Amino acid sequence: MESAILCVNDLACSRNNSILFEKLCFDLKPGEILLLEGPNGSGKTSLLRLLAMLATPDSGHILWQDQDLHSVQYEYARSLSYIGHAAAIKADLSVNENLNCLAPGYKQQKRYEALKQAGLQGLEDEFCIRLSAGQQRRVALARLYLESTPLWILDEPFIALDKASVKSLENLLRRHSQKGGMTILTTHQDFNFGDIEIKRLNMSDYIPEKYSMRDIAGEISNGQDVEI
Image 1 (cartoon, rainbow, N blue to C red):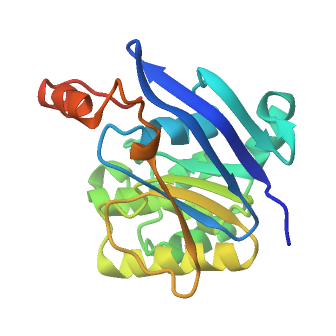
Image 2: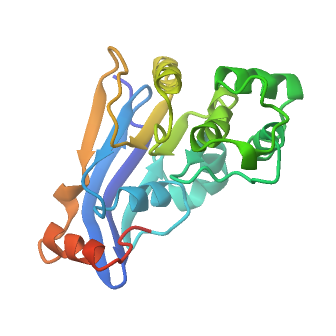
């Protein structure tokens, strides 16, 4: 049996002096896909940002190949691809130029092939400001057709995609898993990864009792952003 590559132990995260989650634990082995579940405000995006080293946990440990993340930051950064909820592309650059920024070091022929697989053939030189929301999302996702990093961290990757693009991304994630790659994602949309078993982690299970979902719902109704 293969050992876990990524281990999360007793992780806690707070914002505005309120704990989003605590005592959160999970591990991930080669080929596994982990789906983070829970309502808005339960800390899904915050957890992804911690795993992508964009934020620091209040307590707990994240281990990569049995080593604390802080001691292997460089190796870990080279091992992951993170795509956040926003497309994170530059509107005044072309599709090809954006992909070159998102995944530098690849020859244009490789980039064009990735864009073709992402459903953007013929739009390589189009400025991103002229693209639809779904097309802009596909520009961000095109880097996954280039990068062979073992760990993908994806926040709502299916958002704004049409049926054909959803199917293409499902197939890509399935192939990544079959090759031993690992994926952590959030999504509110239905998906089909075939015979790939999906691990699930419900963030609501790690919200402290003193900070209930009723409190979170109140913050949302008052217009507060409860996720980092």
